[in-house]
Image 1: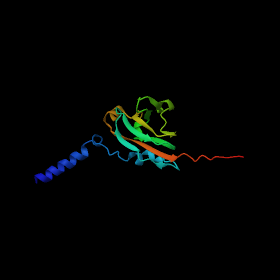
Image 2: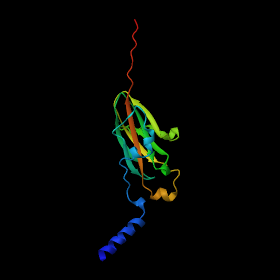
Image 3: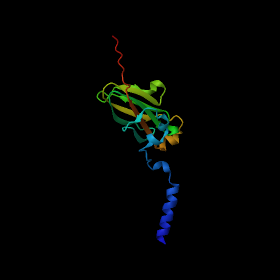
Image 4: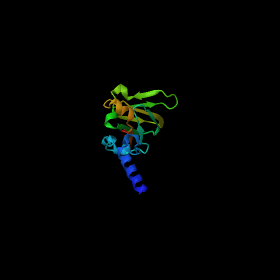
Length: 161
């Protein structure tokens, strides 16, 4: 009899307890969230795409290696109340900011390419313009970084004699 009361109490407590306090599973958010709408034809999904839990106060950093002779498409997504997403590309040696999307009105996607292999730090935080102060303080959401790539097009050599 005590076991049944215990199970009923746990069941009721689990429904009344706010779900925002439980950590979210964000492992594949870049595949399941709004990022998937940015899938570009001709590009392949890069295995270094990542997702992470985030709050308004957090800054998430990812160390990514971009290989040469490839074009990359970077897309960022989060919960609708956390937009816009602010991301910066940093030099890993000097921590100099190479690009900040705040200068481009928080654009959500960026295309870049490299002739040679280049490691970068990608720093991400959320602005949360549509969230209420209560949501900003208590909500833990996900942020996704979808990376896509394709080879540089073959350069055609036109020889004339």
